[in-house]
Image (cartoon, rainbow, N blue to C red):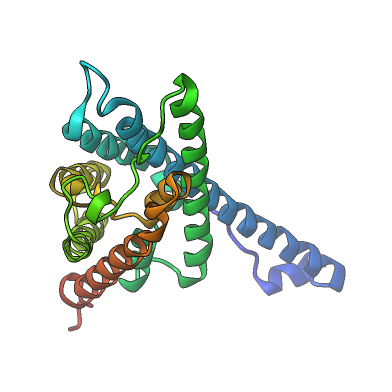
Length: 268
């Protein structure tokens, strides 16, 4: 495994590189590398969230109620889980495969993610979701049919089961709380290696099986935003809940894991 070794100041003096121009070149190369690394992470988050929305919401919009062969709630739940499993193993080593503002916030609260990267990650996730929704919109309108709810999230009349705002709020907080606990536990250094992507994907599948009837399942503000913008109307008016509730659940999970379950220093 290769690594980058930064030269010491004495090395640079000996090599005659610590002059103004040499120092400028040295730090320029170092910061260029850091920028490239950061950009790789943001591109990975964009692509990963793009795949999550295209695969998960795409299955709901295009295949859920297809005449005679619709995949139903089970198929949609599996689609969301499979997108996470596949992208976690494809790009998780680049960015961590958050794919979700709530996940980034929860990891930050738990001390597992830098606050400096939080806003750039969230922006990349939202943009990736919007790009996927745009592609999905073009596909979905290709046969002249109305897009309907466009797999947007909602409560009341927008809830598949006509559940209340209170039920939706509790559902999203609880489901996101559990989702973040799964993520924090599966990616803990003490957990078995190589199974995190599978555990997280299966967890998301189960979360969808439980909560699709209530809110159409969000637990992800980027996924909710992308669909609400294209669905418009009341879906946009209810979008606030699908930012507030998942973020609240993620913060709670981050605090609980950090306080109760995180590894303690050996001298404690």
